[in-house]
View (cartoon, rainbow, N blue to C red):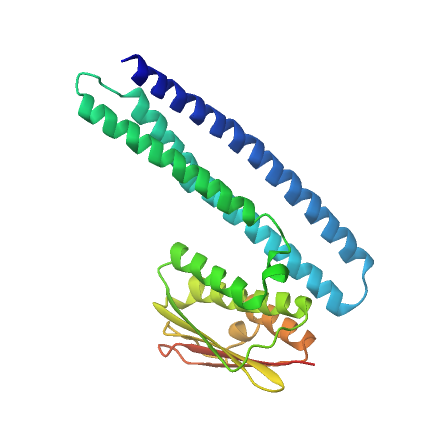
Amino acid sequence: MQNTINIITSLLVIIFFLIMLMAVFIFFIIYLHRKKQLGYLQKLNEIEANYEKNLLKTQLEIQEQTFQHISREIHDNITLSLTLAKLQLHTLDWGDKGKSWEKINSSIGLLGGSISQLSDISKSLNADIIIQQGLLQALEEEIQRIRQAASLTIEFNITGVPVYLDAQKELIIFRIIQEAFNNIIKHARAKLATLSLHYNKTNLLISINDDGQGFDTELNDCKSHAGLKNMQTRISILKGTMNISSRPGGGTLLSFTIPFE
């Protein structure tokens, strides 16, 4: 019995420690996010070159999305797991030792999952992670994140021999693709999307196809859509081209051609 009490006490201490750690973690995230945001905005005001301005905007957008993702993960998953672990430990009934040990083992599992999730979140705090790991790996992780968060099946195809571009170019390309998927999730009502990257000798060809509701590309409100305009602006900075093929009820195909030089 004394051994059981010691186990429960230890679990409660771990839960308290994790809650305190999470509070410090959240404060650190907010501080780091705010500091980097102010730094980006300050640099943005000082820089005149269009390419560098757009790069900083891209970094700021990715930082903001990372912050929102971390906030959702903490709220939706970690907080819930800790709450469930605490509830199970508070409702132990030693009149039924079998059920009590099931609850203890379940609580241990929840705590282990929370620790693992905190570890994964800490890896995403680095705003330069896309630059460090490269475009293809960053896209793999982004696609996995979208699969988990949205009811969208995504196929990812790579053909040709990958060419590793300038890190700043890859960052902008990542944001273009990210913007395209955001549009699909928000507006297309699609069930399946396919991202294809084809590397040839001089260009990177990107196509994003979905089976959603599509739209009339001739309508003015479609042409002036903020997401499409942002993608077009970034493609132009990379000296690339963008084409849209869509019709109501027929899905959408976005294609980009980006020169290596």
